Length: 415
Image (spheres, rainbow, N blue to C red):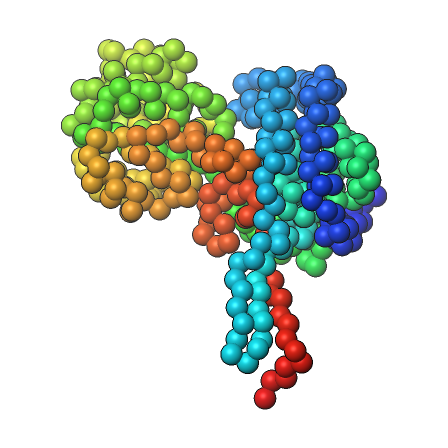
């Protein structure tokens, strides 16, 4: 079956989705959670086939890898999504006009949601779960790197759908070849919205080439500014967690911006990074402050390309500034409007940072690693939007809906 034929089946399946009741919807997701855990070795075997084709030094390797623990976490996310109330049908507005016209604005599914993503097999689970819970049909276009993993996961989804008497057409896994992505980007009338997840190159390609409406999930060039009044111990913990928890994810710290008055504390601030052999690309003043203290083989001079870059590795850029204004100017120039943080003991400074920094998530004395749908109590996420139209930040159930107006009267006609 061609990708275009699959897209037509997806569009037809939207009529099936609106008929599913709440009990059936939850049952499918709970069944899938159990199947994922009970078939973990089957999923891991498929994942190993993908991992064998990717060098361990590739920054995407960690994103591609499934483990027993990660599958358990995925199953937990599926159960969380099943437990959450679907927003579909929620009444957003309701009023009766003086002439008797009764108006009601309710949440409805978007319809067919397409997602183009790279080496992230967990996305296959997340996208299906969130789309299914909101009455959307999902069209998945994963990359060649995760082809075996995505196929095994989709087969498991189809088994759960079949066990509950639901058509497998409500989720479509397109071929991993690039041609299928082109078909998806040109599927006007068949796909309602397209969400790219992956590198900046992938996101730019989809944004520039799609004829279908796109919700942009930007790359995460995340900064943390260590202020003149930042607490050293808080800074040590927050920076270490933000950088090293998982270096391959979009909420990982990529650049430390430090106030020049705190350069004497820079080594103590970053000392824990040596445990993970984090390479530092430090500007001239920071490099001078670290020379002779931070391991020489892990200390490099920064250049222009060190900034505005998503390292996806145990690598951190360092920029020295003389003021809050200069820090925010650097973030505005090099950030991707994803997640930005400040370490400060001054409440007014923190409040100003929150007000003036343009990002989907802005933190005070907190790790950027928390930019995540599950961590925000949203069950899971379909992506983190860095744009401002329709959705911003982690996108979960409400962000996968639109609305429509329902109108009734006792035979009103307009004069």
